[in-house]
Amino acid sequence: MKIAIITLISFALSLKLYSFANPNADTYSLTIEVKNLRNAKGVVQFALYNKDGSIPDEYYENYYKIAIGEILNGSSTIIFNNIPSGKYAVNILHDENKNGKIDKGFILPIEGIGFSNFQSIRLTNRPNFSKASFELKENKSIRVKVIYM
Image (cartoon, one colour):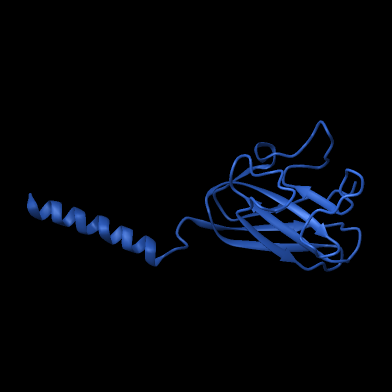
């Protein structure tokens, strides 16, 4: 009986140590692409969110991960690696002046913005985490439409 318990504990500890030694277990890559940018000015900011209520995030304070992509031929692509499985949403900013924030005219953004699962943004179709989120449980590629208002 003691040998069986010791063997079971040793096995459990071995599994735990394996998970520390192999941090990529149960993690995935997420490739995000944007196309049809209106110009090649600036950069594209890719923000990844993993919590309900985290978007909209006008000042980029609630993101899980963020990355900057260069613009080539009207497109930009970024890959987030080692992302645990779960629910995520993406927010894109075509940051034409590279200041890291959404610049606005009177009320509306003057730079391009986009969210996963959104083809348009209106007062009656405002982004939130619930609407923009998707499940990540394998390596995935998505395309996000950048909207200019």
